[in-house]
Image (cartoon, rainbow, N blue to C red; front, side, top):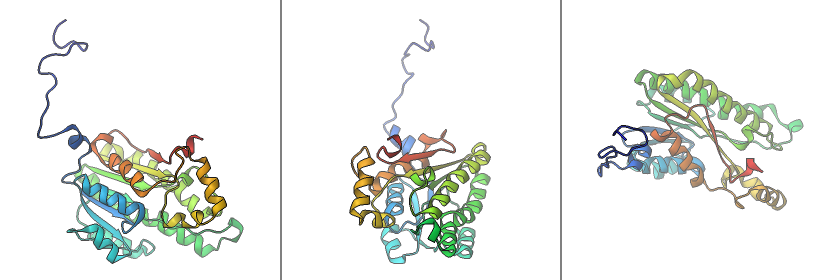
Length: 264
């Protein structure tokens, strides 16, 4: 066979560069600037630390200034309350160029749908949906101008299910997947990857009420094929992947990280 035939391995065809490993080339984020919201604890903190370990310069954002300082290290965090849309807009305008945006901040209010207070409904939608649009739009505009960007929205299993006593939260997470897909349709051809990660049941402050209910906790755990609840670190790796060169052809996808919950 002639060298060049697709079934022939030719000398020199495969070359190894010891200075740049495959993992560094495909998953390394050196030189990238990343903004992670809700980064002072839980999933957001794990994501911020994982992106930093992959080489990114991370700007953690959240309400707890002291906790942010512990995450930011030598970098400076951004104190930001996502329920204050005016503050979100102002922050978006003064940020340096951002290559990676992880919209992780979120809140939850638990109540039966018939007893849900309109103020609670609005509070959840403001943080979980409105603020994400307000923050993402100007940042995405800069990404398009530079021809490169990665946006990862943190959704939930309740982007695909209704849940119990969390109508506003479920509605907001359904909307986040829709927003992810809509943005991807418009930005994929402009160098910007927009995706979502959908965590399953993870041990965070948002799930504390469920974990404190022995009956509900047992019911939920029994449905998870992996036999356990997730940890924040379980979500972080999926986000690093979606932000990396390895995911350059992944657009508009909601990556479920749930221990097998959706498969059962």
